[in-house]
Length: 219
Image (cartoon, rainbow, N blue to C red; front, side, top):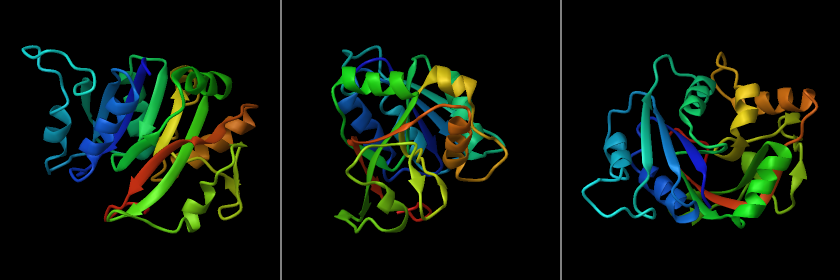
């Protein structure tokens, strides 16, 4: 699958960020990787740069990518994403958590049709703790096996959308940017505003990623 830009927000994600990027190379043909870094002080950015193509070597799209590292000051989740969108070269955008690893994607034409038809489509996340798939309770209970339009959350009593594994049209994100003033749940706020504007988004369980445990993550 070609013509995708991938936005990955990073702060000290050395454990999984390389796996996340490699999964993009495995499932997307020659993606652009846009890393928005929030003052990482571990090996995260050195790992990210390992995926940058060396002109002295034969180009291999399954090993290397066009990598952009964007440093952010005054971080909020929405501000990081909006700045990442400005760096994206392609119309199709994947927002991927630095500790999510893609496991399954439908054929390119199907995925592109999802994005064209809805502007936003998010996939199924399977929580993984130290290699073990754990029971999908609480937040994870939203990720069922049936596709849904404009998913409502009975737990949160609002529209549910999750940016750890979510595809967007760049045109849509430029028209409806994320709220930069909130400290979390920017995806849910965006979903509510998007639906109130008369639009629809899709949950599609054919898109699958493993969401790996991190100390400050949601797993």
